[in-house]
Amino acid sequence: MSYSEQMLSAVEKGDVDNLGGLFKKVIANDDDETKFNLAEELYALGFTGYAKRLYQELAGKYPDETSVLTALADIAVSDGNTDMALDYLSRVPEDSPDYVQALLAMADVYQSQGMYEVSQQKLLDAQKLAPDEPVVTFALGELEFSWGHFPAAAAAYQSLLESGVDTVADVQVGLRYAASLANSGRYEDAVAVYEEQNGELPIHDRFQLGVLYLELKDYQKATDSLQMVLDQDKTYSNAYLPMARAEQGANNNEAALKTVQQGLAYDDTNEDLFALGAQLALNLGDNETGERYLQAALKLNPDNQTNILAWSNFLIAQDRHSENRDFLSDLDDSGESDPQLYWNLARSQEALEDYDAARGNYLLAFRTFQDRPEFLRTIANFFRTTAAHAEEEAALTRLVAIEPDDYEAQERLDQLHDEQA
Figure 1: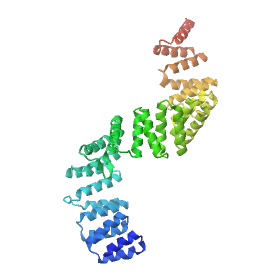
Figure 2: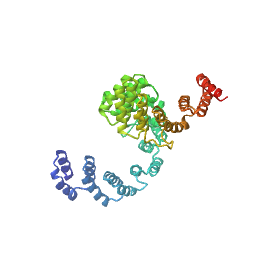
Figure 3: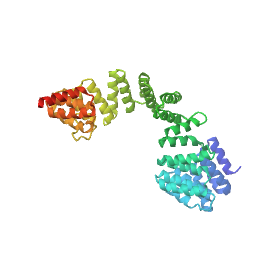
Figure 4: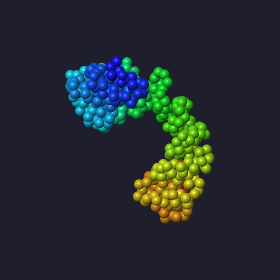
């Protein structure tokens, strides 16, 4: 039995204390082919330190042995030494049978450094040399996907499927193709590809399919697909939000709220779950739960404009105008914030008879809502309350132009005209 065989036997038995001594005997006694085989075995078993020393010895003796260079490059990458990996790979000559593999490895290194264009060029060079090699085409697809070039990624995966390649490195090409289509905005095509896949979808892809059904407003299929995800793993917290939205889309608010509550049991840091739960609770008339969830959402993200507006709307609906005025007290007067907030603040200020402040915020909101009949009615009533008849007339004139069938507004406008006659 060679010392290499003895070393592998010790590894299998877990006798790590004797590995160092055996390794010295390997270096001193075993032939180079045996050492090369041992290096491959040790690297596969995770003993990269010993493998690296063997490969380095072999590289010194056989500087043109490209398989040794690529192995050393792999170890350098796993050690985080990308410069050394590129140095090893650059030594592989273009006429070597390992050159395409070296290009693929270089592309991986450059991609890991965020140098996507250099990585792409290495892969294109590899594709010219091996146009029918599925691994190269797949690597291009993976690069384009990581780069965010989803149509290009989809084209690469599609070419593999059309050539009869369904799997590369244990990865289902069809699933990658579906994900690329989805990220390209081709939702219906993505769903069709997902549905064509044989066997049970992996949980992440099942989740993605459920989200796509939701995007297409197929609420029943979305619910069914996402329920399958949760049946498989109830801790898959990302599934609860789209599941609740699908149930809400199907007008099943009670089920949606229950789903939100189940999701919060696994993830109580999801502000979107709290915000949706608040909306659902308020729609069901559960103001107490709605208020609690709105406050939780705001606590998680005090700067979220959607949640700020939802809380302000809630306070107005509850006639809690003092609270709303205080809540929006830091709203600047630049007009750059959400215009609905200026409208909300003005409504509360008007209710609290702070008319000067209300006037300023109504005018800030006017920039955005000057063509909305509801706003024009509100501001016209405000101007009537404050005896600003010229402004009231202007608002009513604009309202009647937009909605000529608003006879009440027309009657009030005629009254103003008569008073001026």
